[in-house]
Length: 468
Ligand SMILES: [Zn+2]
Image (cartoon, protein in one colour):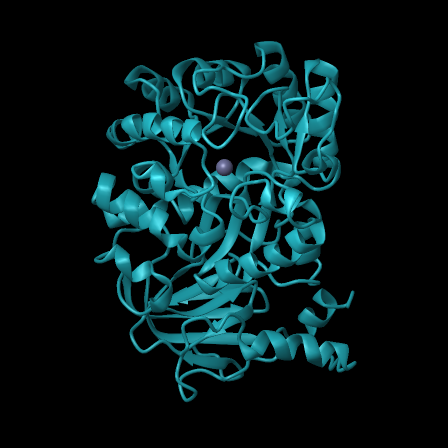
């Protein structure tokens, strides 16, 4: 069975070679040439047929409809597969499994970190080379991935959620008194912050440790105990203070919000991305379009999971009732978003048992709402990359672009057995035959005579792994 071969031999060899002190110095970075591939460049609705892509080091050097001359390159024969940008999930919670409380109550943050490493390998195996993490204790993990200590997708981390007392990230107990901190807050899973000074400090603390944007809980949620769905969270002044901190760092704020009052208050304060949005009116959708506010879509969560809340074993009766209410508005909201051509990105908000099927979020959005594979694919490639640029100076990936197959872009490339522009279901993991991130191969299911079984790390990679 090749189904769950998570890491290719190449990565392992990359680690071992450096750990053994091999540090051959060469002048030119390693080249990898992809031939015989049909290219979805992340933007256009047509494939470039039988094209070639040359990668040099960690960047894409050439994209062509013709054969590229590169005699020194390692050659990968795609055998007619679709070559496309690595997928981007815009709403991950890499360190959450079975709700937020499992690692607080039954394990500890060491176990949480070990789980997160497995989850990250799984994202890579599915072809997701970048995630925007929408909240949890992820800042140390993101730093470790960037420094080559653990393998994982690129992470745009939000760090700890910002939540008011009794808000969507308040995981404390009924008997807490103001100021009490539960284990999750102590480990920077979420910050309970009230008032301008506290929200400023919480936002700055995230940014201090590498957050690329700030995630705020701006209204009631389903999987939380103290906040009925109808609640609006954070005052206008608190939201404005958080947005101001983000702007001072050159980045932006995304919010968890469901209904008109929360969403409009957030937009008034300068928030740029609304995640969820399931219960808003068409008027609010139109306002988002007019003001350039992006929508982050969770199709599986809202349509499949909340359509059958009994299946979510860790939900209480109250949480299941809230899920049913959200499900009732989600389809209409997404149809309005398509009609009014919002800037849409997809982010699964899927974790635990669902982490193995992140692509289903794109597939469900396509099958249930857009019926337009090109549009659906944009939400996880170039649209997503556009929103990621809003992290501005906090974006740690400044060498290249993301989400497109373009010269000067990062070599985040996947090969699909099939054509997702015709059949979106080919995005499922068993069709993802090759995964490269930052020029490193994380998965290689191609026959041995079509691609080197292992592509050795070049000299630039030695620097990357130098901290080991
Ligand atoms: Zn979430």
